[in-house]
Length: 268
Image 1 (cartoon, rainbow, N blue to C red):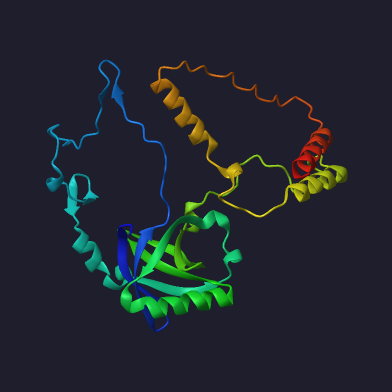
Image 2: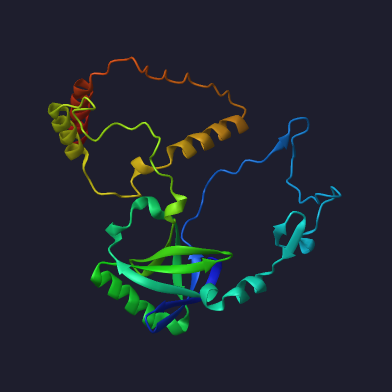
């Protein structure tokens, strides 16, 4: 079982469900290291004392908060928990809302909620209740030193804790050069809208994350390139496509018709 990053309980009305949180995502980014090109030795990041320039052993590394220039207060994990035991040990359910009410831009990171043995029945009850109501539970949770807004979402056998962003963490669209919603003002015709709708209908389907067309092809290609270089093969860089000029006139209708024909052929 993955390592639990948090242990506490879900407070659902008067019901308490002891749970732990484990990561639901498994990042697979390719790891590159810094090298010295003179002898290919690895260049390491070091924990260096800002005054002496000497490396600091892990046992001497502590958390500190600067209360004024040059004055620090050391804060331990026990201090953080003691500040508000209830807040740091409880997922406090606030509301039950429709998932569609939450703008997708608010979703940040998923975790699995795993019940302790004593909480399995209450966990199953909460999961079934949310499923039958077609709702998700909004809650607050403190992880490490930060309070998060979160959604508890039933997903198969599991309850998923989706950390949410706060409104202040999202940028507004002010200052962005965006086309008007008035299509006529943007030069879009009804014929173009009709053709575009036909294209959307032609490619409509259900999302299957295991589908080959949704593979991370860039990662595959980069790994293939690395293998070729490791085997001593030549790697030639293809020419990048020329960017479209702002002054270039694009026949959107012709492009839509070609796209629609190709989409229909793919479905045949």
